[in-house]
Image (tube, rainbow, N blue to C red):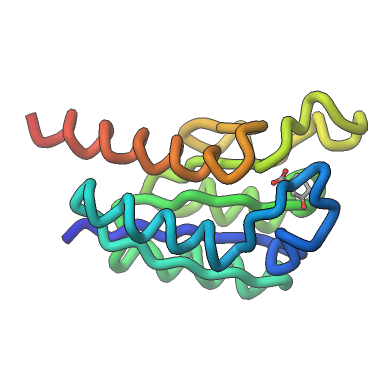
Length: 148
Ligand code: DQA
């Protein structure tokens, strides 16, 4: 089966409880389960991982190269600040899709800037937990096209 890493950045362990008016009331465990279930339908083995630290996220990106076709990555607040994560995304040879639950462009100006977008394959923002599912569907289409 084709491996997919779903990687969640800082504070996303709190979603469901954290600012539900912005991030919704679905928990991270529920989102992960939706991705695993939909992944099975698409022929993917989806593995999910959340970390609050930059270094742990970087290690997960590096290691994904050994087993995953691609990565769905919500870098959370590090999106706007982390050169180290930007370099990790640029440095791995597999596609990385940037996702956000909220529409970052409808929020504070500091969220409009992403260091990750220029080095990612694409970006999906503003569809709540569905942002992750849209990214999964995009990866399925990428695999399908490669196997034509
Ligand atoms: C977020 C948007 C970021 O600006 C914020 O720091 C987050 C979550 C989102 O999914 O909407 O923690 O990545």
